[in-house]
Length: 320
Image (cartoon, rainbow, N blue to C red; front, side):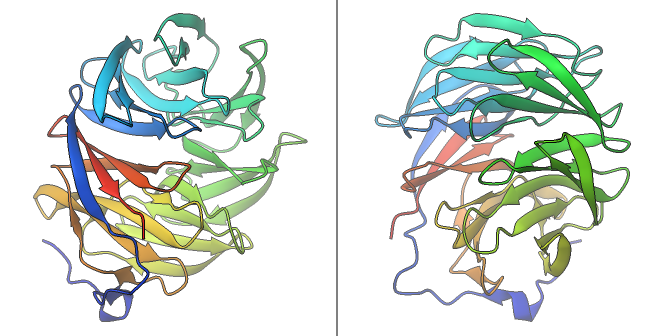
């Protein structure tokens, strides 16, 4: 059953300076696309195809797939280094690994071991020096030195580490632990857990790069989004559908949220939520079936959405 959206969090009125939010292309990729990243110069888009163990490389200028890379067994997470040269892919298998690929050619650079049994949604620090790899089984975060491409530390956080995201300057890392119903905060200088934010079944976080550095948390079973300020939940955004992996615009004004399901049917929309009013702005954007992840290009011209059931990527013009 689809819950009715709460009146106070929905605002369908358009604004004069709102983004266009127009789908301008649909690109066919591999089977079961999920996590998606954009190169720092906004020229290329990469998406993990979970069902066929590949990564599709997309030329953003002509919106065409220009490469299909082998991503190892059961790829789950994907990150790109700040220089745009390397892709890090977690392989969600027993005694899992991280596959490092040349972003331009797809050539295998190295397979990193020692990252736990089932590594999930990793992230690379803003300075590019470290990759943090959460492990679903052990509740640990492995730290990979990107210079040596080897694990240098293992941080214990809880029971089931699912995803990680860095603060804009990289001083803190936020780790979602669904079993412990908490987001753990790691001081990246000391590699110690310094705080624990209680929330319900968190699976994904995004950090606002502007203002008060809000953290937004996707609560899986509750189908809500928690807004965190100063390490405390200040707002729960109620949504009528099943929110998946969302993204914040680089100017910090909007949160783009894909809806994976619509009741028992596949979802096919993305909504734009104001980060000041926490209300949905404008009409839902129709994309493909089962949108699973949104990412936004650094030049803030386009948002890219992976549609898991369709095997496609939707390109949304988000310019004003």
